Image (tube, rainbow, N blue to C red; front, side, top):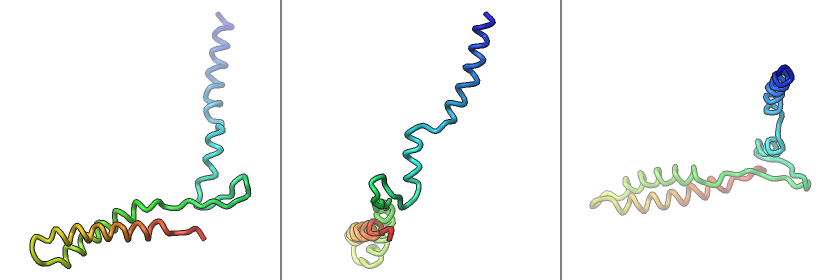
Length: 100
């Protein structure tokens, strides 16, 4: 009984230590925290935005501008065209950022 309790106590001390040690996946992720990193092959890699923020902001801004420009009728056409144009413009601006 005493040996079983000692083994259980040793195991309870070893489990938190093994959880605190970085695993292989965690070490692999640390290279991608920055905008630029050098890969194992010596090439420089860059993390860029996929343009989602620019798409949303451009769409909202374009809808407001399109609604202000189209003053006749129900103004839905100007709002829809402005949103589409603004979304395309915002996405192209946001996704073309380069690291250097």
